[in-house]
Length: 74
Image (cartoon, rainbow, N blue to C red):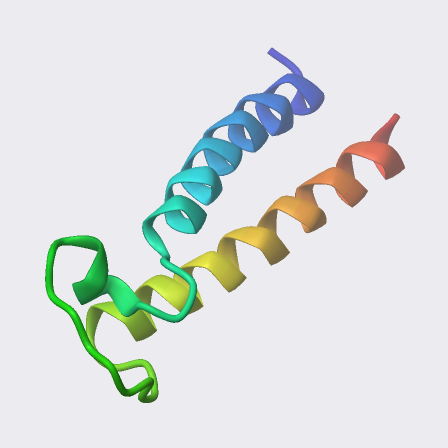
């Protein structure tokens, strides 16, 4: 296996994780609204919601970096 194949495999794994992270976020409802809790007032992200947000940002940046690396190595 060469480096381009490894990058492609890692990109597929990152894309699936990114997809799951985005789907777990509900727009305006927060993570508690996804599982049945309801809140009328929108507040700042806390706890798992904040972690999920930053995980999404990290995965997106990592995915783009892998795509650029893949292009540069071809």
